Length: 313
Image (cartoon, rainbow, N blue to C red; front, side):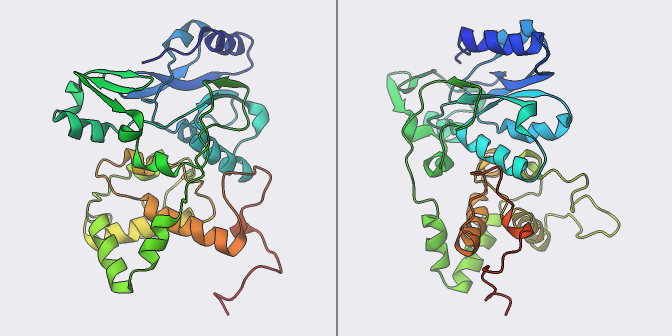
């Protein structure tokens, strides 16, 4: 794992020493190979713990809800920055209370894919991460072959608004983000039902997707509410379907496509397919892409006479 450049660490230490920030949220090495863990730095002398490389998977924006009212420094990948923009346009954070260290990100590792290739358990993964890829034994696996599938859909590898930049920005790839959505839309209704029933059968209702989502910041989530109780929170298919559909609708016009929920899902549910369907619909109806303009009003809280009303008439 690669330590942050000395000049970046020095600047973060100065922010802390001068009181410009109360806390810096970044990444540090964990007890597992090829997986970084969030680091919460409050003292200048702690900055040497900070790292950056393709093991830094977490979207750290999800932790900001714990530090409302504080001045926070944070390290962001491009996809993470999009979710921060969505929070800012909902009035949850203002730029003046943040110091942003941008990471030029070519993609993050899919450790499950690495486990499959190495035929071992995660704690026994061999080798080391090099700029060219994963060196294990005599084999060098390119990063493109072991980065997470959602990284191929990435719309923004490097944040555009930042105070410090780490690394050289890779070229933006401009993928066809909604190609998979259109493929599923082309199926019959029975085929779509079968597809999503099979996909959601993997869900065990652990709520990891909710807990990691930066846009899930309600004080009381609908799944935790008991007066009234909205569903029974079992792993029976009706409860699984209800939860996933409701969570998806709650993110309509708000999901910025960071795909953190998909990356952290322990069951490997492709949640991004549901979310991208609504992102595609919001773009078609309102020409709005959450995560691009912090000054834009969220489309579902904005009335415009020219909005398409055909779906309600």
